[in-house]
Amino acid sequence: MEHLAAIMMLVGCGQGTGECTELPSPVIGYETIEECRADLAAAIGHTARKGLVIKAACAEVDPGWFEEDVEVSWDLAEDGHLVVSVRNTAGDSVASEVALSGSKMTAIQQ
Image 1 (cartoon, rainbow, N blue to C red):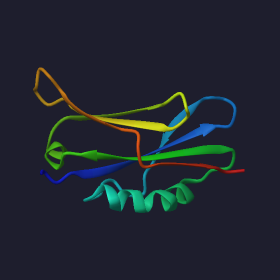
Image 2: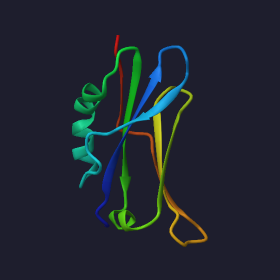
Image 3: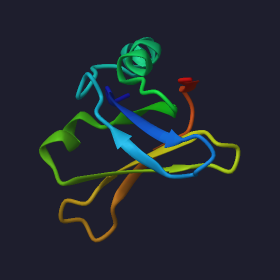
Image 4: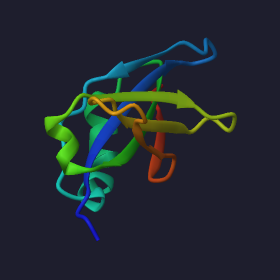
């Protein structure tokens, strides 16, 4: 089994507005998904802003992709959790994709 690395995605949404924007993650990448998950609560606390609902998720990434053209996208599922997709776009006619909706956390800053 190939070792996978991980990234963290943080998104801040206005309460009641439905408008969301990406927030900077305190760490660019992780060696394991477990390390990323362990940092979720601290990352939410670090990026907390008054009046924002903070959504966070970790996504596994093939470590070979860090040298490739990669596209990271996110969306909010109907139930409100953050879904992160990582797509390798480097020269392949058929792109590889990893979509993660697990390991999620949400915090509301009042």
